[in-house]
Length: 224
Ligand code: CA
Image 1 (cartoon, rainbow, N blue to C red):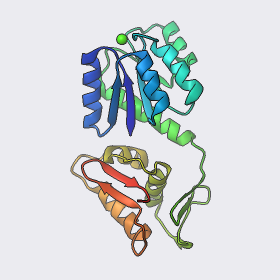
Image 2: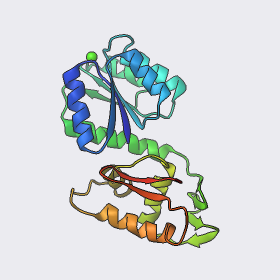
Image 3: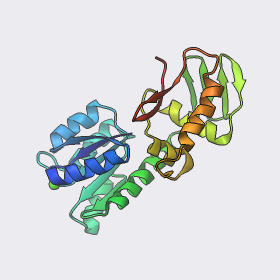
Image 4: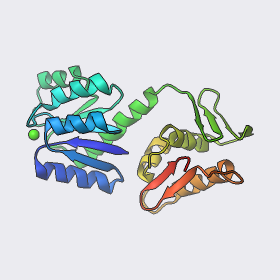
């Protein structure tokens, strides 16, 4: 999952970036409002975390601008201000959630998960096709080369997550949260086991293979 962080205080930006990277997120940092806007509108992110008081344009204005071009990008606002009025101003500009500084890092993680999960659930179900693999989220059916493949509920959820994020590398922690709703302890191989189940049903005996391991990063579904 790719996160854009717009925060002008280097120590705060570093603290958040390092913490998120440890959780498997990919983080890009902008130190002022305008370069934040440039990144937000020019690249694909799964979440933007914006500080309110920024050089250039404020986080609130930045959020408005992001909303006008990228209505689907979840936005989490960080601020040292905490009055009700400030919160309303943030929500009015299209912010999904709000955090008042200083905050516990665990709380930030929890909010990130809640915001991105809400967004994922808001995405209407649809049909997806990569190479000759077809997934129908309405009917909960999967076919490869026209032949129906039977998946368990979790296998289907995992495949659906991969195909709706095709070409993106998904970290294990992100997959775990999105499919199982929890973070598995590091060291368990539940994700890898399920990926192998999926591979044997989806890829075995077919070309091209679609599920790929990105060493040290996670998994991706793509047509190479
Ligand atoms: Ca600031």
